[in-house]
Image (tube, rainbow, N blue to C red; front, side, top):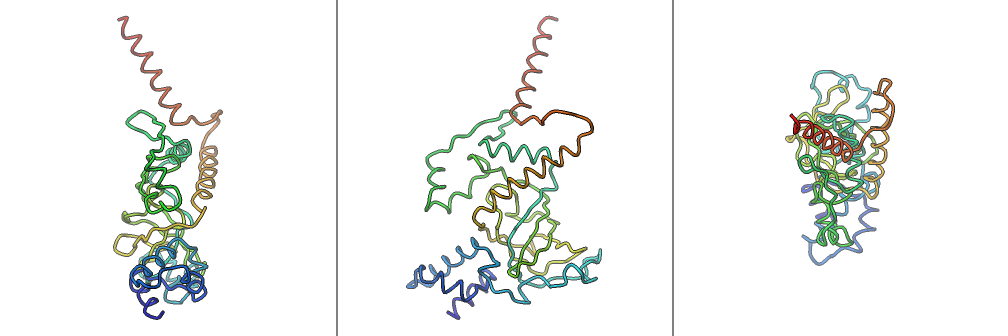
Length: 273
């Protein structure tokens, strides 16, 4: 057991609780140490860290991260050494407009993708359907916008709300593009990250590839709940931004159709000259 815990700590920076291990080890292969480590690691990154990990002072956010003056400074003088294993509980793409983000969410709900100026409704292939069936979970996350319900991955930068094993939360800012940190694509809400030597400025964790590793994973229905909540937030932001304009916002499909109609009208007028 001690050797297993040491390997989990060294390879994934994860420290599971004894209660979690007692519950899950019984159903995992015990005759192959490598397979046991891989299976347990997979289950951990798909668990809720507040229920599966042991909160330790060295592996969680400082309790005064939101009140201590050194973390509130505008200069990146304070660094959290870590490693701190965290999970994503919210994420915002600050590189895209509210309108574009809302359209991406709505298109994912309808199973649509943009190809040039065309809106295409995608029907899942047999292979994709199998990957989403029980037992095919390892392949389901590979789609980046082709199957219904999966958004095309965002580019960012992102602002991300992170939660440690104790349940304490802090916002991070993607100072440089972190591979795997995205909305849509492979990443789901509840995805796990490991932070090492992260600078803190004004309570924000400055994330970059050198200090942030995306482990993957997710937590149950968090992703769908987040999409519904985020859609409502974007709709409210767009409505608040309107100044006297009435009516609902057109979908991507309707915008493309309107553009084609205008092009056809212009072409008809040009033919008579």
